[in-house]
Image: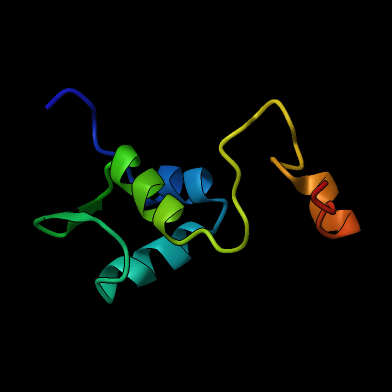
Length: 82
């Protein structure tokens, strides 16, 4: 195992939510977690993948344009073809 598991406080910081929310989601098997006896731990990479899978709305692969490719066209409507 190359990366250490994190606790609910660190998982909450990673996700930007209270640790109590993280523990409640784990209790209901709604978030990836590992149970070690009465301890609940989280894999940071798994949480990031889980979070990414729940993204909604437009996402753009190009970081050089904060509005994404074709953003100007979207704002003005389609460009007429000549």
